[in-house]
Structure formats: C-alpha cells, structure tokens
Image (cartoon, rainbow, N blue to C red; front, side):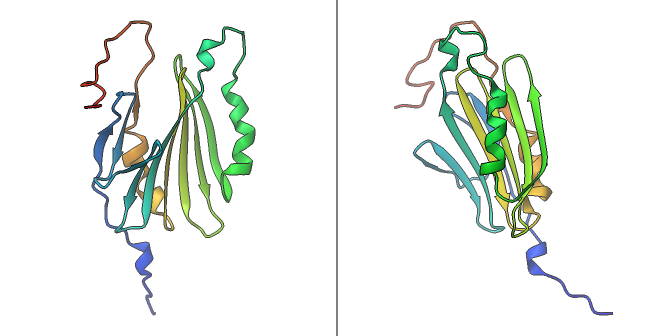
Length: 167
C-alpha cells in the first residue's frame, strides 16, 4: 500500500491576535501582518496562503425615518451573483441592533471561503476568510467565534483625537 501525502494538505496553525478598530466598532482576531488600504483591512497568512479581510461601508439608512426604508434581507439576492463557486451554507441572524449573514462557500478550484456581513445602523461590515483547500474550514472558528461588534446605544459618548488614534 502506497501512501502519498500532499504538502498542501498540511497547514501551520496561525497565531491570531486581537485587532480593535480605532473607533472600537469591531474586534476581530487577525494575524500580525495587517495591511490597510482605502478602508480595507487585510491580514495575509503568508505561510499557508490564507487571507482575512475586513471591509466597512457606510450606508446611513438610520437617518431616514421612513418605515421599512432599508431591509437587510435585500442583500440576499446579491450573494448568488457575487459569492464565487457553490454556496454551502447561508444563514441570516437577526438581533436587536445588529443582524448578519453568515455564508460558507467552495470555489470551483476547491478552496473554502467564509463570509460574514454585519448590518449595523451605521454601516455594513464584511469579514471574510479564504485560503487554499480546507484552510478556512480548519481555522474559521478561531476567527468567526471571536468577532465582537460594538452594540448601538442611545447614550452620547465623548470622542477625541486620542481615542481615535488620529495623532
């Protein structure tokens, strides 16, 4: 009996550290080599060929007081066109202040991916993880189970340049 091992089947366990956005809206485990460009935060795993990405897009629909002006479920139809490959699992979770879509897919090349779209009163936050073969399936719990989104409150807070790290 011959045993052939594929080197791409073995991944070194990534060492994640907690990343906190300057506005403290999101906390997510990332790798130490974080890259920020045009509002997109990327955290590549060079050793394993993986990537965690955070994209934040303002929508400001909270300003409009019309009933049912924005329905978070309207994003659903966009997923089949914009998520590559086959969607394996799609779940919509709705909470008091934040709702989100949790989507897992497999590309045509056999790579697993995981997307989570958080819909807050101010913005849509995308956290995605991708990598070679089953990289995402192996390490997604280390990331997605440890994401914290700041809850919306009606209390006013004081913001200074020091709290936003604008110095």
